[in-house]
Image 1: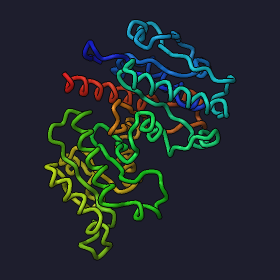
Image 2: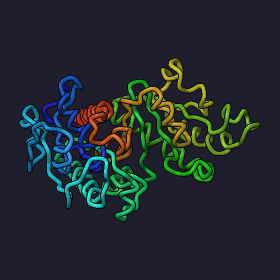
Image 3: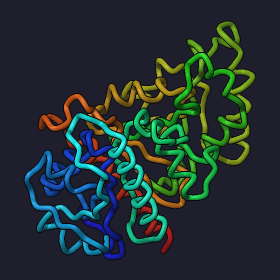
Image 4: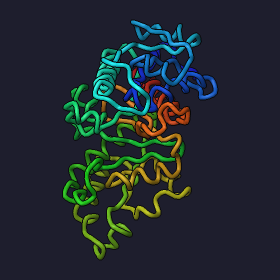
Length: 336
């Protein structure tokens, strides 16, 4: 991948060492030319990679040395686990290692030592068991960057679709009680600014989904569109943003409809993730908007059931690395 001479390597945390993170990172390096990847440095326990891959690992102290090392082996900053693990068998030590690697990778991005951070998949269940109190990595990264979770948004990006859920990891029964004009407005604003900053879209177009079937059918099938969603759309339009909706969600994601907007703002988790994964399951990328640093992640989990079986597909990890580099380049260009 061509990049400005000032673009530093990316940091890629391996995630849970018992998951598929180490495997997909190593496979991404193996296929770096085919997948058009920029230089990156892995962050985590080197033993988790050696357990699933027999390629060359180059342990570094300075992430900036990844540029010169990248063609000779997989650059890595070592974050050793307290014990050597087994692929597919998560442990307390592995959870601590995944959190330590995440902390270090984010710190490298915050300090300007790397151009972006890509986070490998972790197990929330394992992290909760060691006292992790955040809903996910997104909220953890936001806190470490000094940004309120209310001011960030989780974008799911694929080659032909970008979606942002207003509510994320909450039960469906709780969605309506969490929705408010202020929250929708904040997520929408973060999305629009993120499209400008990370993708270089000068006048981004945002399509807002309704909550109910047929977007409420004028109130006949629910009044959330009238009382909650429309006021947020009106507020964003008053600021000069190009925003449409609320649209019936079942007609938003076909080919012609996707050509009319740059991102879709959805009301709940599955409304955003189902179309993205249906269209781009192997290439879906999670991008956190509203941060002072670029952070992406592959849109898949730890897949403990196939870890160590040489079955993990690296394309989502490779896509996360490419998107992170592209966002970093847009930010660097706009700052000049």
